[in-house]
Image 1 (cartoon, rainbow, N blue to C red):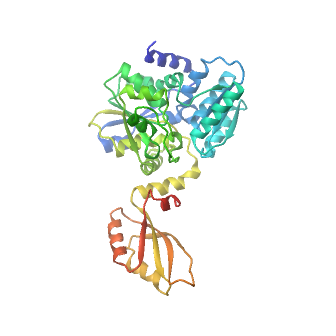
Image 2: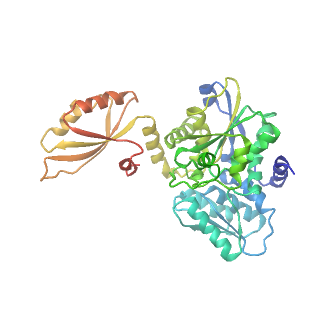
Image 3: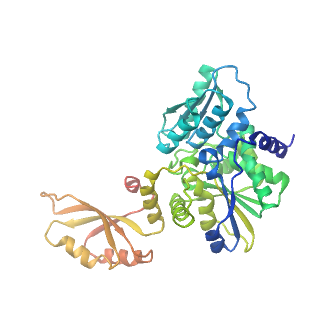
Length: 411
C-alpha cells in the first residue's frame, strides 16, 4: 500500500470523529504577499489542533492487551489522545512537561472525561517522552507517539488530502509548522506522491530547529538546548520515522524567530480575529518574514493549533515589541548626585521615547549606581538616534541585547 493509500484509509477512519476544518482566504496576507493565501484552520479541530488525526488513526488500529495507552505531549497531542481514548473506551495516561500552559492541561482532562490521567513532570517535551516510555516499559501500556509512528503520520497527512478536496485542485505552495515532523512528513509525503509540483515548506522555531539539525547531520541529533516558548514545536530531537520521510519528500526547511511568531500571533488576533498558539502562527509568520511566493499563486498556511493561554499574552506582546525594534533594555550607571536622572531625561531621551521600566537602588557607599532602564520607542527608526545620544552622554550605558545571558533574565 502506498503512503497516499494509507492516508485515504486514515481519512475513512476519521470520518465522524475529526472535523473537516475550514479553508479560508486570508485578506491580510494576500494583500501583503500578492498571492492568494488560504488558512487551513486546524485550530478549529477537535482539541483545537490537528493532533487528533494521528492519535485516533493509531489507536483505532491498535490491540490493547492490558495497561491502556500512554503518551507524552507538549499539550496538543495529549488532547488528541484524550479524546480518542474517550471515543474508543480506552484508559489513557498523558505526560506533559511543566512548561505546558495551564489551558492545555485543563483541556486534556476535559476531553478525556475521566478516561485519562494527566501527569505533569519534566522541563521539556523530551523529558516527558522519556517518562512516558519508562511507564510503558514497566506497565505494558501502549505508547502513542506524538509524531514518530507511520500511523500517526498517515493521520496527519489527511490535512493535505482535505486541502486538495476543498480547493478542487493542488495549491502552488503549502507552508507547514514543524516540531517532531509528523505533520510535515505526512503532508509532504502525500503531496510528493499525488501532486509533486506543489512546493512544501516546513517552518521551525529558530530556538528549536531539530529537523534542520538532522538534515545537516544526515540523521536525527539531539539539540543541546531549546527555547520552549513555541511549546507545540519545541522538540529537541526530530523523529527517527519522520526524518527520512521529510528528507525524501523534498520539503524546504527554514526557521522563523520567536519574536516574529509573537508579532504574527498579535496580527492574527487583532486583525483576523484568530486565537493562535505560538506553533499555530509559525507558518503565517514565516510567509511574511522568510518566504517569497509568486504573485497570484495559491498558498496554504496551516494554522496548526489554537490552544493559547491568555496569561501568556503579556510575554507575547513583549517579545513582539522587541522583535519590531520598539522596546530596548539598557544598564545605565548614574552618578549618585542630585539631577542625574533629570539630565538623562532631558539630554538622552527623544520626544517620543518612553521609559516603561526603571529599577534603581541608591548605594550610599558608591559614587555611581546602576539602573535597569527599558525604553519604548515611537518608531523603530528612532533607535539609532537614541543610541547616538547615549554614546555622547557622559553616562556609562550598556545595551542589553536579545540573545545575551543578561537578556534571558528579563524575558
